[in-house]
Length: 362
Image (tube, rainbow, N blue to C red; front, side, top):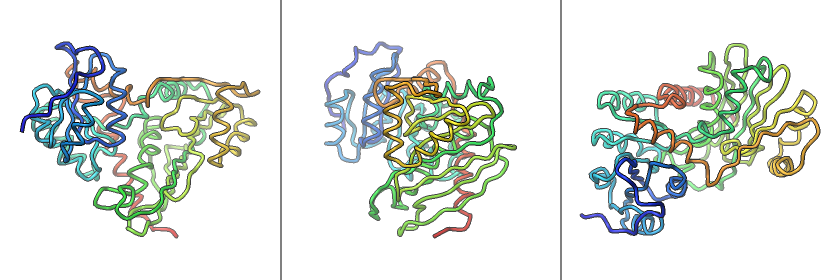
């Protein structure tokens, strides 16, 4: 079937060097991707696919491109150079494999796939076909994360002593919801814990030891998990959950100063830097989700004694930074991005699988 015609993209007409992106899926994250694509030079939306053609048509009516009734049709569109896969977790492997076979560059919304074994196979396929492949864990590409990475490399805060992170959002239990449905790759580790593990590896490398525990939702997926990762002498205590809303900070304590990626850290627009006394005050205050949000707003507007504020504001949702990195790599003929190597995506999935083999609590 021919794609449904749509109005031109909201951005200027793309030139021949612009990378045409196709999106598989029309959900919330797909919409965010399409909107943030507007901020990326040299890239444009070429097409969208959905199992329900009407949804794809409604999507392109707002964002541009052509509507397709299947991902196979999208992959057959010559105007599509790269695809962003925003479908349920358990569909990632099959769709990404098809995209690689079609010689399309591939960006997959996290998690890359559902298992480490699938990730290794997908990486091998991309290497064989010399095709770009990356996991879309957008947090790694935020300016605030780059600032922290540089600060750690230059020992600005002194010797790293510990890492602590939490990512917990309460979701009412419903067995057919993607958060809780095993058939859709549900569970807090793949949805939330992956950020904590991936970011810890980005800052500290591969962990030497992995411990922890998880507890189950009625459907059998992990409702929440506590992870204890060790990086040399540096302990990282990480928690994720669907049954409560946490303070959602990412904390790196050094011998001289402590850095706080503020709530919710996955979209951090601000980093706070504090000495030992104020660091304890911030950590105590921000254990509560409500107080954490209040403190975050106050610290953005009012100077707080003893705290240095590093601001990294940006328009949109923040996906433009990963899109820009992927677009640049594709244009340069690269198959990976050093900021998000596939080896770390695979290792993150292995850690999640290790946690799931540990005894279940509660």
